[in-house]
Length: 193
Image (tube, rainbow, N blue to C red; front, side, top):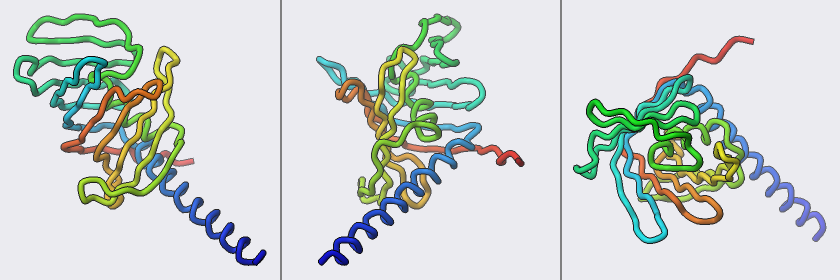
């Protein structure tokens, strides 16, 4: 009986190591991203209502990111540029500094997803099916500029390791959900030691 429990324990430990390697391999891949273009459907979960947006995002790992609203029609063309912690809104020729970002928002959630995948602390790792796709599910512990913890849970296609869907929660409350429609990426060559 003792040998059986030891064998089961060893099997569980070994299976856990494989999972950790998947998450580490994914983070290594996302740490090499230099530029990315994404399109997504974002749902903003507010206390009294739900708002939905369709956006595109041009992400530069060494610069900033620009998110452009494509729907709803009344907001189409509004651009939000995130550089570090600063947010600028632009529409036509009008530019407005919107101050510093304090938490997760539709303007910064796509760059946040990419940074979380590259350097977030992995709290959970699992395998799930999402819309008939075999996915690797990772929950990343991240911190906002204001020190607030943001949980970024993302489902990645297991074959391509591209993001499929993400949820952002603050204080145990779902704030944003993101369905990734398209994703293209450029990576940097690894530096030689």
